[in-house]
Length: 108
Image (cartoon, rainbow, N blue to C red; front, side, top):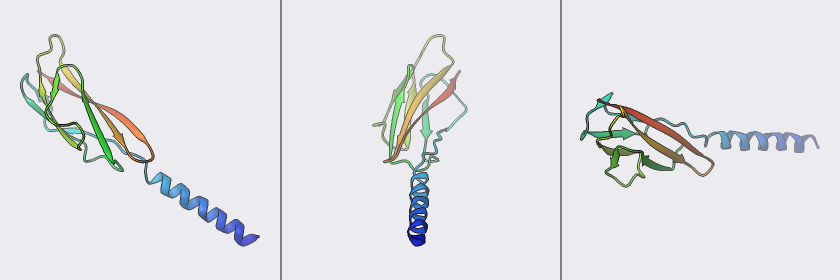
């Protein structure tokens, strides 16, 4: 009985450790701190951890150049009157979870 309790506790500990290892750590970096209309923005989320899939979604004032499903994506800054920033939403997923983040950049 004592061995069964120890084995059960060990099994539960291993399950908890393996599920914690799949937690997504999200980050995304831009190549510059500010952009002009018609500039190309490069966003890179390869600093994120435990990610299997990427889904980039540009908001108003950005045009995506790639397919939106790799760790790095490029966007063209479009004219958008009255707005000094542009935002991209990024959904990161693995077999255990999904996490969304937003990345905004300054447009001069």
